[in-house]
Length: 376
Ligand code: SF4
Image 1 (cartoon, rainbow, N blue to C red):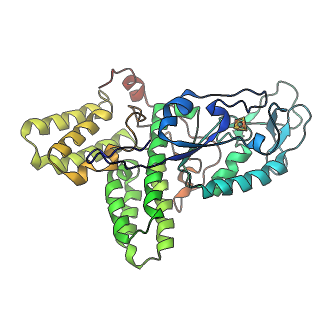
Image 2 (cartoon, rainbow, N blue to C red; image 1 turned 120 degrees about the vertical axis):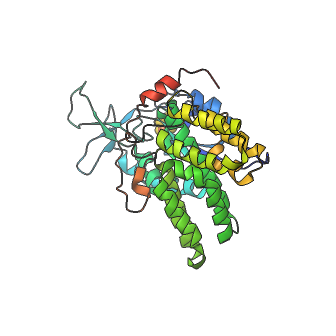
Image 3 (tube, helix red, strand yellow; image 1 turned 30 degrees about the vertical axis):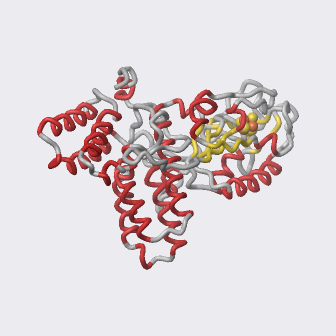
């Protein structure tokens, strides 16, 4: 289901294609023949996206039910071994995953949801066992599933998350923002675009980018402004890499307040005193944790529409994805969440490549209090 532009009512997001670990949709593909149906994945998000469901272990011929497998520490990294017989599936999975990841890249996906803790699909903190560990020995939780690792290598810009982390509103909001933004970018770059199209795209994304990383937003602005002399293929690649890296940085309350004040400034001379006061009051209440972000965002949108400021009303910041999907608290603790995607900051040139460990996910106390507020 496409998202609608607030100003025109036109569909703006088009078809959104999301890869998914098949067991999350309720298919009995797990080692015991069961599934891990996830309500958000199977019910909430499903009407808005087209899923590409993949079970790597079944697709590589292991069948269901099958012997359970796990990651076991080896000399050159974790190996994928049967829990009972110890059979080593690493080489077969590596060949399968490399081929399948390339196929999935060709499908032009916009996001991927993976099953946590799986030795094949898990993205973060997957258990790794010592080869000679006795029964009951605790694993370390520093692994990444073999298939998930191949996906990250093949499609580094692709927004990816685990279903468990998507239960946290801030992480879910961040993931959805990136998925729908990636869809918009890929739609623009897939046509016969001109440098003016890139400039227009960047202008509409400006405040969304600003809420995540002002430095990245400025760098992208320079890239779009100086686009004329750059070969088209290189320009698209550089812009895509930096765009997704910028959005992978977490938004914070402080950055949102900065964006909202910027937007309010563009309305300042068009509003009467009462409306101006109302707008600033909603921003202040959000800053103090007394209202969710949705409140000042709705106020900016309402006043921009009422005053016919089309460029402002059309900012993707005001409608990053379908409203039915967006959690009310879409912000997360910045300093505690150094990267939003599996590659984290590594996708921005010059950033250090993150390991498989996930960033901490505890919401700030502000969100715990906000989550108890009634709907606006
Ligand atoms: S976690 Fe991955 S490999 Fe395991 S059952 Fe689900 S889709 Fe298949």
